[in-house]
Length: 264
Image 1 (spheres, rainbow, N blue to C red):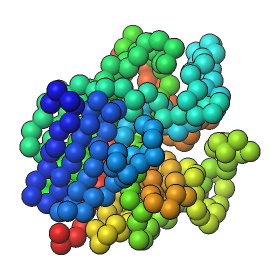
Image 2: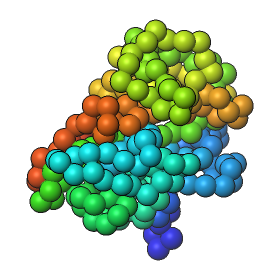
Image 3: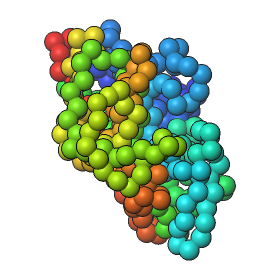
């Protein structure tokens, strides 16, 4: 494990994990069928492949700026003028425990200009005969902070997508969500939705169902080669729209399930 790579799973489902590449799932294979865009198939960059954690914020923070507890904070921009997808996907994670079908990963969040609050994150990834379960917990140290976190899987282009959200966030001229819910517009999408239903798709004959207690889902299906379906605890720019606060020494947990139904 010196190179950060590990594989967990069973005779049916195999999960490749690259903890040095942001604690991400590098590939999910059902039999011989890969479900994700792997590192060799992606455009250069940390955000275009695998399935990675977005933490301690998900999506864009507008201009990297937000106010919290009477102070103005400036995060380093990494997507135009904006700060996107947190820091967890570009930092190496530690492996706390691994069995044949489970891994526990941990990350000490920075306490510097990248993220001025410290804290920590844990991930648990578990494989069984019917699918994969993901759980993430964010914990504050001696400072409270705002949080919005989730997962960003890059699925190989599905032949079918069944997604039935209740509403969507309007995007402004900067293509960033604002605090206004509107009716769901036809795709293609790069949008955040309020969704309470499982999301179903088919990839090379493999039926995949995603479910989560998260009510915010981003779907990015504009690329011809991939579709991203991202459960997360809040909308993009959550620190400015509707911040969730973790109090000092407190924590927040979220999870999602990837059910895999096929005869493979």
